Every structure is written in C-alpha cells, then in structure tokens.
Image 1: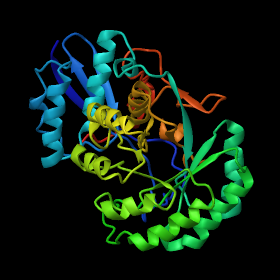
Image 2 (image 1 turned 180 degrees about the vertical axis):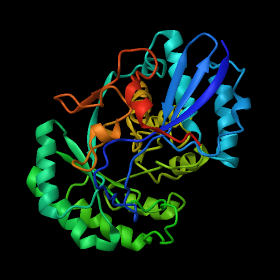
Image 3 (image 1 turned 135 degrees about the horizontal axis):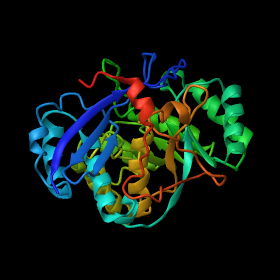
Length: 370
C-alpha cells in the first residue's frame, strides 16, 4: 500500500452564534476547521483534523509514495516539520485512521484497548457571572455530566473565585470542578505575561477551600520551581496541552511539577508520542487526560488514545451552550458526538477513528484550502 495524495479542505460552519472565548481577546465571528485526507492506492482514505495546516503545501513529497502504515517513520518526519514549519499532527491522525481500517480495529484497540468509553467533563469556554454559571452547571448535571471545568481570568480574580464558589454551592459534592487559568501560553498577538508564582500560590490556596479537583495552567511549564511549589498548596496541577516537544513534558515528569498531563494529540506531540507520554506519566501515578479543544474529529483522536491507554479520570468535552454546542463543534460530522446517560463518551466500534463525515455539508460549506 502506498500514499497517493494528501488533500486539505477547510469547511466552515453554518452556525455562527456570538462566542467570546475566555482566553481570546478577539471574538470569533465564524468557526471553521481544517480537514486532512490521506489517500492510498488501495482505496483506503484516512481523515484527521485539529490544528491549522497552513504552510504544509510543499511537504507532500515527504509522504506521497510511502507506506501509510510506517507510522514511526512518519512521526519522525512530522517532528522535524513541527520544529521548522508547523504542527501538522492531524496528518498522523489520518494515518492512524488508515491503520485501524486496514486492521479492522478501532485505533483505541491498537493503542492498548484499556477501555471502550471514558467519563467526560464539560469544558466551559466563556466567562459568565456566578449566578448564571451556577444555573448552567445544574443543567449540565441533569444532562449527565459529573464534572466541569471553569475558566478564571486572573485579571478578574474575585469574580472568578465567586463563580467557582457559586457552582460549588449549587452542585455540592455531586460534581468535580476543575479551574483553568490559561497562563501557560498566549494567543497570537497577546503581549501580556503570566502571573507570577506568588499570585498563583494565593489563587491555589483559595481554590483548595472550594475542593477544586485540579488547577490548570497556573504558570508556564518552564517555571518548574513555581509549579512544584504550587503542588505543595494541596491542589493538583494540570498542563501541557500545547507543549511543543516530548522533552518538555519529560522534564516536568522528572521535576515532579504536574499531576495531570494534557497534551492534545492533534495540537501537540501527536498520537504516538502522546501514548508514550501517557504510559510514562501513569507509571508514576500521574493522570493523562488530553486537551480536546478542536472539533469532533480531534476529540475522537484524543478519545482513542486516552481510552486505549486507560487515561482519565475524565476526558475534556468542549461544551458551553448556547455559544459552544456539539452541533457547532462537530458540524463536519454526520452526527455530533454526545455523552451517554452516565456522562461518558464511547469509542466508536468501527475501524479506524470512526469518523463519519456529512459529505453534503462539506461540499456546500467548503472554503479555501490554502
């Protein structure tokens, strides 16, 4: 079997509600996605999605003509491109999709088959007033969620802490609460700096009183001493969603700075390297629960890795209606991904990643493919 071509499409959602992400100073007017198709001479096509593939044109020759199942080789090529050009990890997801189809197995089974579904947490993207957020948390609980993550802006700290307190008061002990400070990286064009270790420590101590399950990205990953100090505050520390290299997360593991490792397989490291990182982290009694904030295809790729290795205890499920819904997130799929009554997301039984596209929608919604 040989790779005969790589196609990139960029469809755009019809659903364009106002949505202002807590970490992004620029409101998004539209929502689109980049899809990668890897074609083979035996008629098997793999699909991946996640990070933007801008700049990939000109590198196709590194893959066309090669065996799509030689994934170790392709990962090494993608790592060099990650350093010099861009994060093209959706291509690896498409290759694993092919691998699973050829083997007749879900990718999660190829990655270890530790589980067939994972509990998820509702990952909220917007900053809402305490009373409104508490009401939304109760609705999420009714829908089956047993955990949720809240964004807290350190520049509006008192409001953020009040929101966490209102949610804890509303749900009691029936839901786990995670908090994300989004301090490990910056959106393009944002010149602000992270808070310092002292401020992060004060925030962690306040959140400990509210029984927060983990505190996410309170400091940059490079601040090993600061992160290690925060763990002493009695709150689990999570991070690594955009880590550019495996070595950075291995340094965190050796230094004992993180309790929860979150590399997103279509944004950071890729599926194969994330599997390795997950195994190493869990060997040291740490959690592996990847970031999934892309779309339904990226969510599926992360689900397969996390389920395959037995990650958890929760998987991120972007959900914050009315701005962020399964229909908007998964507009390219025939059916949006949804949780079951127990608050779990099941691994598709079909071979590969289990991606079923809405072909009619893609044809009508496609915009430029660079």
